[in-house]
Image 1 (spheres, rainbow, N blue to C red):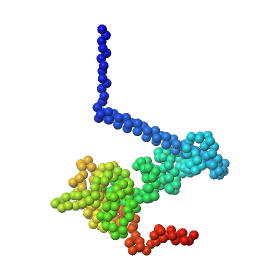
Image 2 (image 1 turned 60 degrees about the vertical axis):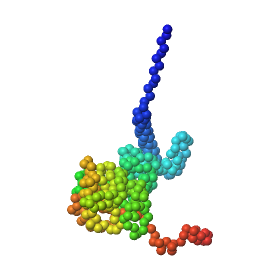
Image 3 (image 1 turned 180 degrees about the horizontal axis):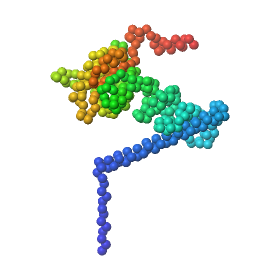
Image 4 (image 1 turned 120 degrees about the horizontal axis):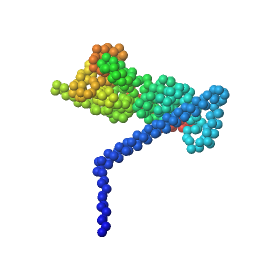
Length: 348
């Protein structure tokens, strides 16, 4: 008599174990996809640089004009019908790209690390070589999209980054002081706010929190929002911090104090008080010393320098700007859109 084959049921993993396995594999696939995309992008940027270099060299050697680019685009398009990016316009960008970056080492180390579309925007919007390279490296470091890159260029980040007046070289150890200095700007650009000239600190603060995404973009990478009007109870009295952040790279709290008018020396004393309280009450033993940033409508550099000279707590002072609302009485005197259109229509 034949023995029955023993049926062994396949054991299925529990949901949590399977979810962990799935998450790990998906992360590996996504990481490989990113690496592959980066490698492909680098190859294309280097290819475009090589094409541009050939065009540039032949034009200079043979004295050819721009019509050769039109002919090249037509012939290359016929030879590689499935390949995009061989239009006359793009070939001209390739030539300009090779002219802007004659050294292959810089192309490989910097600009080949960002997409071609980023490089095109840099060629269009930034004429100074050092500034262009700075934006390329910043885009790599912070992972900026093309739109964010354009926003930072139009906001003049290169000319504002690291320009706040601080005492960091004296108040912080060398590695942290350099990084902290580069994180602060002057002036800060809050053009996403439209406020009256008489707007007070609370109105400015409310506007920044309302537009928190744009505010964080202007502050820069690494800032995590902790709270607005953050409460501190000290010796039985209530105090409130305008805006409190934590910076991931600096590993410290950052207090922002907003002032609707010009900087005054007493603001530094108040910030010194806040920094001592936050370090005592909120700072974890592994955190670095907290940093203060006082943002004012305007400042006089000598007054700021004297205010910080003998201050041991790390802080910086910078100006900010925002769009101004038209006064109510002036608004009524301006023509409406309908009136302007009617006037234009009548003049035809």
